[in-house]
Image (tube, rainbow, N blue to C red; front, side):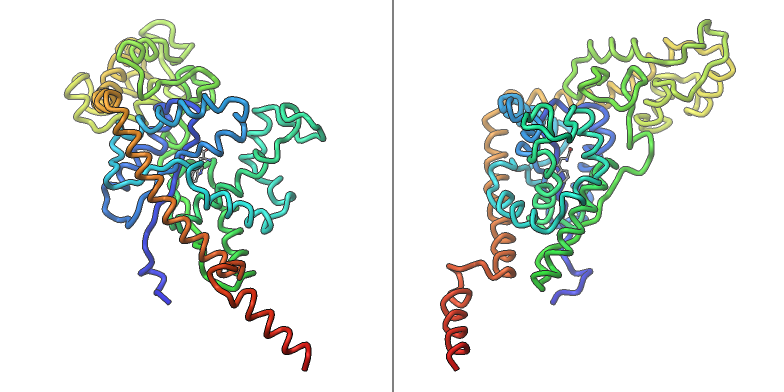
Length: 381
Ligand code: TRP
């Protein structure tokens, strides 16, 4: 057996294609993925467009999911995910994931699944009460309830060691580790890998609030800046951003906490040289914040600076996106190649799982015929 530290380092992460990706996704995960991709520290990087998972709460609207597969892939490519280094694939095209999900269902109880805090809060948001009901809209759809099991299949099928994801995915990775451990114990093997989650380091990156200052940036709240927004709408959104309602006149003292302009500067300021470039009145963010607190620094000036910082980041993303948008055929080919590759890798894991369970009947006659003959002999002695 290979020593643990000689094990391949494999990343699997993914997104549900239910909408375009926004600044919250960028700072919370995409930027990190690109860094990990370019670090050279990983042997394989897989990014899964989780369309089957998206269907667990969009079953009546497959068109929405389908359209967003391309949107999300364009977002990946435009931020610097490189298809030569990262394998982008579509979940529904990978049959081994479905088969593994079905076996893993046996290794978890509904009681355990009910305790998943992320699923609980998602149920609440979607009005899936969990009360007895024959109506999917009101009750809890079994597919949605069990998606953490399918996510376990996603992760383990690629033998991922590392899952870069947001904090809200911690219960999923925990569930995955439990199922993988149970599988290896029950079937007395070491086929499945128990992965570690890799969450963003700083809190401004972990949970970016929306431009209205409310909760998380999210499509349903309509408070997003999208990676695909044009310069005009980014400007309009930043200019309308929630700041400090008590800061009425420029000379009034201002608050930094809960002020989205400063929250976003904390998250997106690349380095102090951006002051020299765009706002030479200050050497760094600390000085700017102190002036705002004292009074005398107006919101408009702060917003204009933030706009420069955000545009410096978004402009190259926009340019890259335009290139791919004019080349959708190539995007399609990338997804096809990525999915074909994923099918091979995950079929291999599925075979190993079936072998460990000794249900690989047609690969190995022993599992049926010879075992049967042995049993006959023994029982007739
Ligand atoms: N649950 C993730 C989300 O809501 C998407 C996802 C599906 C995923 N499969 C995954 C994330 C595997 C990490 C690993 O965004």
